[in-house]
Image (cartoon, rainbow, N blue to C red; front, side):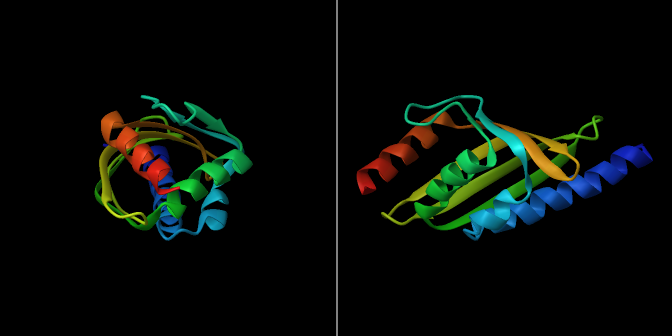
Length: 145
């Protein structure tokens, strides 16, 4: 049985995740970044050539996520599962992302993300994704420029 503290944390964290994700997938990066702490970081567990393994700070995160959304005509996620851990500040999110690329073609990948929250904002993400699909995405985006 989930304790009251964990149940409250799950509701708050899942709400932050859902609201921020919808903004990102709609290309509203300014509003999306508003859900992140000033010193937040994004880390790729399986880094690929062409992208830094860790991105820290709102400005750097804004640039990275702006680049991602600029390369897509649409972004959708499916099979989203939000798992609140026993730590009220940590959740695990599973999802399948599908993007229609502006240069043509699609990107599809399964993601597992450890999300750390602080005071109702995202403090950090550690993302596991299929690195071959992600490397192929970077190749497609690079060939589009």
